[in-house]
Image (cartoon, rainbow, N blue to C red):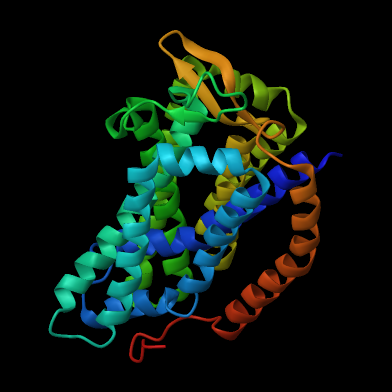
Length: 347
């Protein structure tokens, strides 16, 4: 097993961890203007993610750092070509963090911070899915300096080209996934009337996700058939399909039995399946070129954008630090486990 494959898988694990954990943070932020009916209920939702949201973002930071170290050429392309989109995502994450912290103390500007929490959650939830859609569909690119041997590739499109119909469909699918995950977490952490509304939102979000997943699959057959073929010819692609379908079915059973923790775990399995589908559908490509005629066959792969020496050193670091991150995550969730009390919601 080569190191490129190992690091592709490790980065995939980090993205899966982020989608599952910070996914419910983003989902609760998107649901924040609609689920609660009082300040106390809004406090319940904030307290449901308050102790963990910043730790959940570590998974995204770790994934970005691992991508930089393991596949620097792809990192450079993404952060230059998708610069405005990435800045909007970072703006959203910063706005969400600021809004949560100030909302806790500044009652005078409560409505402003509530709006900031919503917008700061909606932007990343939508744009992350759009980014994945473009990575599946392929993007226009060209060699930076054709006369220079070994010159890198650069994105030649515009920001608006990234908002094509297929990527927007993927963005809405990603948004529904985060809302489903957020509603599942809200149902797990709340009580009373807020819990009842979260249960309904969870059910509706899962139905919307299933419909959008089917629509995106059909669109992918027409837009990026290569990705479908990769999934169907890969063992892990079938694992992803089974995980996605099993998660949806298990979540419905758990909902019928009013088993909130089971529904959240099943929703997390669905998220795992969807991210794994993305990874198996594009492997071994990291960035795919698409021209006017479709796929060109050129782009950045795990072999062409990595250094074997760097991968060896980073693997040793990962062996030490990934267990520490997992241990910290388990400790935090164990410490703050249980439902948030409506009468005393602040953590």
